[in-house]
Length: 581
Image (cartoon, rainbow, N blue to C red; front, side, top):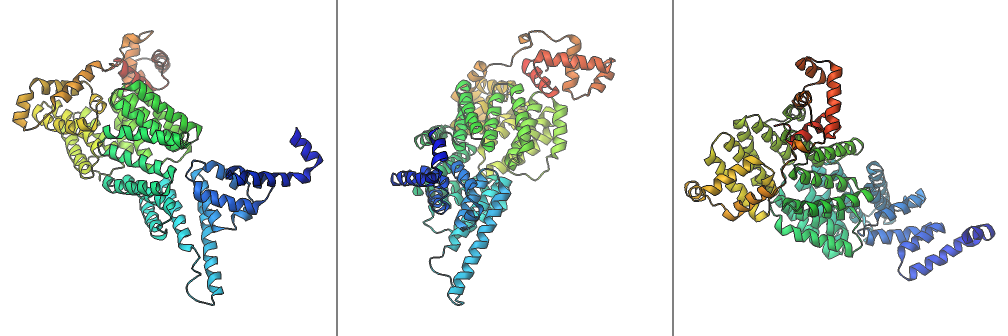
């Protein structure tokens, strides 16, 4: 009321009062509040100078959204008056998902830099070198940093590497904050590349972590450290990293960054680590906290990453219906938001996995055709999870020799690049393939190698999730441990095998059909089996000699009794309940 009266009676005094407020805040080091009052006073010259100072020093503090709001309030001509402002604005635009607008700002900055060079040369009357205080190369390095980040959004590995290296070459050694971003981008490039060279990725992220710590760049320290520890997890180290992620969560809280995307990712991964040990209540609580943070911050990439961890947790719990629902959520997100390639490949692998473990082989086979997968494909880290699912499908189809050929290639490729987390699953699958054809001796060779990585790494439910056949194989190992070690010349940890078997027994089995409030009729069971086999309603009607409308009625009743909304969910739920074999 008082402000309204002020504007009505002494409106000419308002700008002056805002300037006084600016002086008061600025003298006390409260720069963010000071900028707000300069913009309110329309003192854009001083506002842009202060924004440049804040963007230079505090851009790592999780306050990018505040900077983004200021840029929206600045006149266009003020932003375009400085290459530095254009670069900072491009950074904020990119962080908010406006990739094309960010590129336009970078191009405007480049034009200004070239014009400044020309003017400097003119002042020096044609001399080749510009003034010594002209920071063209430093700003070009920063432009390259943002372009490397852009390329990571598109999954363009060659461009990430090109711009990251260009940035590291152009940026002065003392520009630690921007160099830490460039080094982090380079780590992503190596980690996401077709080869998936985790050794190079680890080196790049370690360098980025060290640079960001030296620069006092908390945000980039969190991001580089998070990425470094994820790489170590992929290399088979879970036990060592649980405490590391707890420390990152603590650091984010201490620095007021507990509600930004990277904090959500840390909670999510800590949750996955608990679930790997079977601590599902605590683990899912952490993952859901990560989801909450991502939703509050409208951070789509973090949100999808949290969903993937929750899918893995639900898969471990045999909650295939819940996992399928999350997959559908991600598909809806992908329809409106361009996910990076590694996420789209993970999404596809998740779909294939759930169809396979729920016995929906018709859908799984169609998925293989749609994805163009074969055992002779050129292998890459990006599609490794999809090819591993293909191996599962081949085992389910009793095409054991083809599965073995693919798994041998996958294992060799992953071991050469230290992707040992994947190697555990691949060797377990190969052991199960041998076991399925009654070659127990060969099965034990791969099982022993898988457990040799799983035990020190802390992988429990990666083994448990392979189900009853794996439990049977472990029982055989335990019953004849001495002979196994003597004949195969292998060493198995008896304590670890016992721990796995006790976990198998304690694990909550899939719900049985008697959990249904109303059981399915014999005819509904017949329809459900044909649905799970991939037959259309018309094909089911012809097979059972009933009308199409009757099939639709049965389908509706099945969905109601199983509390699902689609054929895929019905098949998954039926498998979970033990209704389908």
